[in-house]
Image 1 (cartoon, rainbow, N blue to C red):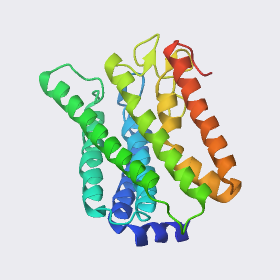
Image 2 (image 1 turned 45 degrees about the vertical axis):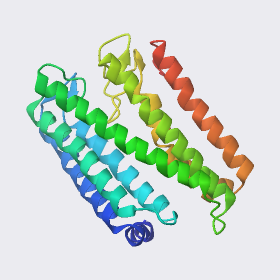
Image 3 (image 1 turned 30 degrees about the horizontal axis):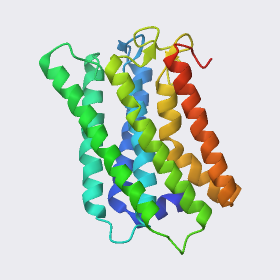
Length: 252
């Protein structure tokens, strides 16, 4: 693990330190889940910033790793786009958690509605920038890297982009569940609904293809055809959970 972190730092120290800050924030948020009683939708309010901080750590470090392979890529612009936009999201979500108020789906006042829209724009810009990175990976041969590894990164980026934009299905409903309004069943940190369809399941699975596919391909599969097959199955899993959620059925 120490070797991996050193590698991330060597490849992109800016995103490494941003991820480290988010990791430290996630530890703080976790402590607050155990020391405060403020709740939003039936769960401790600090679980949401905890989840977003941890998700940002994994995204920042994964992209720091992958973007280092790209020739002539403006890393500085990408870094600061990610830091400013995702940093804004975490800060606002934490602020609202401290007040025991919604961050997402909050249209109770014009200000809250505007900030909710700004979060959607921030997430969209980061996702579109990730789609651009994905395009660069498809346009470059990467002759020094194993084909199976390159394909795992390409397909991981595709799934990330697709299921990141799936978040609009939640924003349009102002709810992450189908069949009830924002049900949480306290499934540890995730809080996925055990009773109704939960759109966060597909969102989570699809976006974390960014880490899962390259790791499985590089360390276990070591084969291009098997990597593509595994990626298709992984994408099918995310799609199945999305369809099931849209039908109002819990994956449990």
